[in-house]
Image (tube, rainbow, N blue to C red; front, side, top):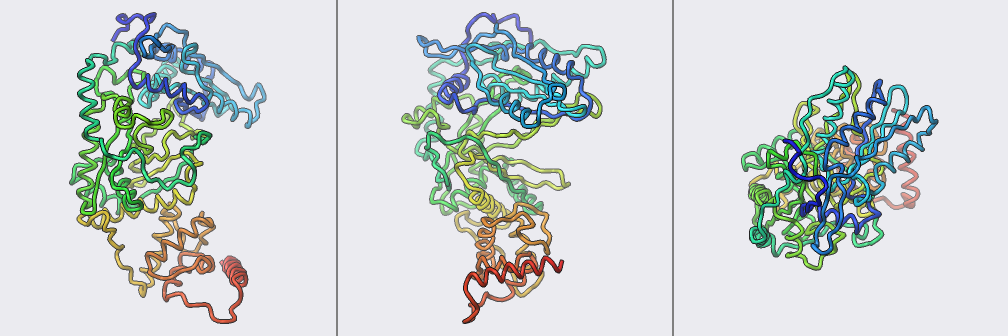
Length: 556
């Protein structure tokens, strides 16, 4: 599509989503929540001069990345125009300029998280950094007001295609990028929008706009750091297959299944049974927007309600209906819905729900040449916008599908022990859905009874709980809990889980002494006995446990 229609010198109205981002960006100037940074590390020989020129050309081609924004106070709207200078692209030779690793790390952090002045500068920047002969970084940061996840993949693909073509002395075949106004939908009248807002409000009205999360920190602290933390768990392949089979019969995707598991876990660990969850929607239903770099993503809110009679199958149907309804109304402005349902809301907080549920989608690596591949690196630090976000992904690396559930949140809000316990609760929900789809969710059916007189059954029980608490399937029956990745907080959780599963009154010191899967399985062979008189103080018993563990380590 040619860009000869809209005039780049004209101020155009921003979309409702862009306007919301602009307002929140001004409220949270010191929180880099609305930046989308990416760090790609290339291994192999890279022509840094060529890569720099290719990135500069790619960023300069797209009108959205040349945008400048302003607030028209009289019209009460945010506007943009696209005749600004293109984004800056730089090159740093860390070898020639003798940059230390710490200096490079600080440079990358500054490139990723320095705010943009949207009224004065382009909403994007990039830097090529040569680390050594075999490693090169590409740091790309774009403001969310003109960029989304689909845009990132489009831009990275264009950079790769242009580099490969120019390296062979040719030019890539690229279509002319359209102006954002050519694919921006401003056709709805005020009456149409008001009618659709009213429909969504009617569906969501009455649901709490908060969720009883197990906070360890204060979410209302104005000084709360948005530096994030992530924890995840990988479900067993058999459990995954059973869960997905039940979900498929109810017409549920992996995402909808994640919604159902999250609602069930909240309902089983709190007294709340009515939830609003946010979900990020790509917003590219119109084919004209499929290949356009811009901001099309929007946030939807879906509602999940259950009661004491709701079965797992019914909950899956509820999650499917909630998702479908939200996607049908994906073009209804969230700010307008929030203003109706929660008029006194804090504009600095996410609207209607502090919890996000989304599919986890990793961007594809970037191949510049045979053997020269750029892979996206974890961001340090990472920032979290939502109080709690659940990302659902199907892991296919082992040959069998396995559901991966990942929690992301501001690190100050939840301790590692809290997220570990919540992931364990999610795993229990998945296991119950797999085994008891006709049972009620809140009935919390007891786990299949383990025959503790059977040595193999005891060993399997302890091993499965270690896998749950440690978040790994790779468990050695003769390696100590701490050597396997455990710590004192996880040990407390292990005591609780083993006590619940076995019906034995276990103590922390007992599991500390019997520090392996095999040792703890033997411990379950008989109920724990009371300490005989004269056995010694708690310190004596603790020292004895340490000595026993050292002796066992020396024997191995």
